[in-house]
Length: 286
Length: 345
Image 1 (cartoon, rainbow over the protein chains, first blue to last red):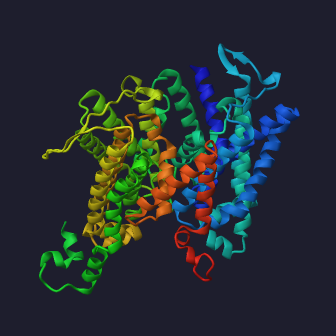
Image 2 (cartoon, rainbow over the protein chains, first blue to last red):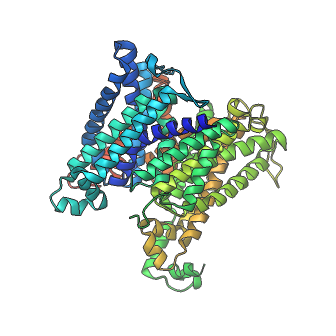
């Protein structure tokens, strides 16, 4: 029971790291980016390929995955995404679905459609028997890393100068620009960091979530659930939504495997029916 | 419908001279020569291209599905990522009905349409609130729920293997002596059947979008607040159009299941919702015949590219979508504006 809860928390933390970039893009630029999972997949594949083909140790792969995906995100933001910000939502949806399809088939073409396995270092394998609660070492590692990241993010957003600039741009890009903030650069940086975090999440999650070319499609709805249920105005909203989703999904699949993901979807529809702006949205969402 | 009278004074007194606004609205509704030509082309395609009946049948079904999405997206302005929910629901209903109740295609079609319309009516409550993102999520969620249901209820739907062993009876047209058209391997009967449904739906949809109801839909698409403040009941209209669209999508799905004798999880897949969006965007949204042209272009492209690289066909779909959006949807269907200046969309 507690093991299950812990697995759910680890899963939720992972989803949070994967989706937080999306929360920022959606909240900041009001841009519906269905291709967010593609960045996560990129991070996962970078890790797998580096480890299996070049023999890079696992811990060194994580920062590489983060940086490489962030650079990829920055490049795409600069070239493809920026003209899309002012477009209607339909255009954004079509555009990002197109990107997903391209990413899925490109990876399929280059690497192959089989599931990729990751070989964790020895010290991350096995379980810690604490008080008869089996806790996977790797799951614990995920929880610690993600919790540290979440705290760091919260700190950056609420305490640093960049954070306040970002929040200013969130609230009103035009006024922020008028006050001399380079909104475009803030967008670029944020998008890059968000993509990098997705890449890191993909690298961390390759072992837990499984990694194959359909990854962005399979988990697209999960990321969107985290963001739409959690609301896009805070960091804590998506975090709580991700934890809720993680626990509900793990518990649901364990106790009623026949229903599968059915519970999660139904829960999402119900929550959105009840609070269309998200569970933890500020009262006066724009 | 008290507000309808305000938009069309002609209805209150048909003989009175029309005002300028009413005349212009009437002008849109007039039959054009190319519309008649299009309707004439439907039976001609059946007569002239007998060997292509299977492909044409697929095109007609996709066109029907795209018309349904057009009512929701093009006329009412609701971005849906889960329109396959109704398509799939219609397909499974028709297949199950044929398998377990009676194999008559027309009765099955009517049952499937009714069931999908009911589903549309029930789920339309979900799209009334929230932002574009919420609606996107909810439509996607409904399609995913149905996908999971069809996957897990394997005693009913056959699960991941799909619903096999659907045998359709011959078509018997009610109230006439026409009976005994079997679905054959060449697909000509199937195509004729689909064409009749397509033509009927087109006529209904044409009537619908040119009616005061259709015009009011476009008003609320363009500016919902304004439409509400001049007295249009926005939620009622959205519910109505969503239900009609669901019924048409259900018809498309039922036709697919009946003419192929098979229903699989694929009908609920995200790919299907995304593809129909693409089809509609190629043909043009908010334009009744867009779905048909889009379906023709899409299916021909599909055949062409799939013959060349079957596994990676999706890459080209994706590339096409990205380029399409970057160029701009409006400009894409108007090639003469590509190289002109100052015609920003």
